[in-house]
Image (tube, rainbow, N blue to C red):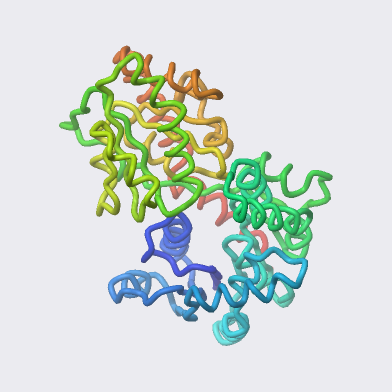
Length: 395
């Protein structure tokens, strides 16, 4: 099939979950199909990143979208009722590029990644169109609103949450098919169950590359969190862990060390390293050595929705993981077998302490987690079902 991917963020060069997912989508579908891509780029694209993606695409169209332009567009959106994130990424040039590529490349089906990309395909009824609402933005911003203490950001998140009520379901109804991660997302987006064109299709991770080498040695009493630290969802998780959970762990095992891995940490996170037991790495070329060295991985995420790549990567790396209930919503790793879930600070700390003390249990749980990810969460496993779904939509 001749397939078009539309994305609000050019894949591969920024290293975040969105870019990684779209890049792997393109790579997978290029095996047997002609793939074109149209996307926005908030910053200049390194040549090597462009060249890497070019190997898999018949055609690439990129529209420059600097942050100042997005902010200006979002400011205009204040006077509308639509979510501000839609305005932030609203580009007439990109919309025209999408129409142009569909016509010139005789595209048979188009895939819009994320709610923000859906606006460029919603009204193009000449071909089947798929929207991947991953994750549910109403769930995401509802949690941000509940948990944020900054009054300005709380007001913004509250406004965005109210604008998202019903919006995702209304947009999804314009598409041939709507891809969702889980039932949790569906109920948040469509509490009245009006949608009948949805299809559950999460993404995955590179399970083979994250598998630990045979000679990997784990440091005793070491904890790790990996995630892009400029994301409020991630630095909120880290700050919450250090303020509410880590002191409970230190009360029993003061020698425990915590490493925070991820680019562009804010000052509030950098300041945590004033305690010599906490390390903040900033950007690293490869997160895998940190996952292979730690005793226990933690993911105390509170604000996020959808699927947590960092959990998949930790499990694939053979790391026993203690997580929040929110972190497991899109993955459904078996509790007590593949992961431990801490629903309170005390329970979270108790799980960490138990895994640090009981190496037999930690190794058994890590093996269960690896097996679970390998069987269900490879890129190929989920993209294969997506490919079958798209084939049925192409007339």
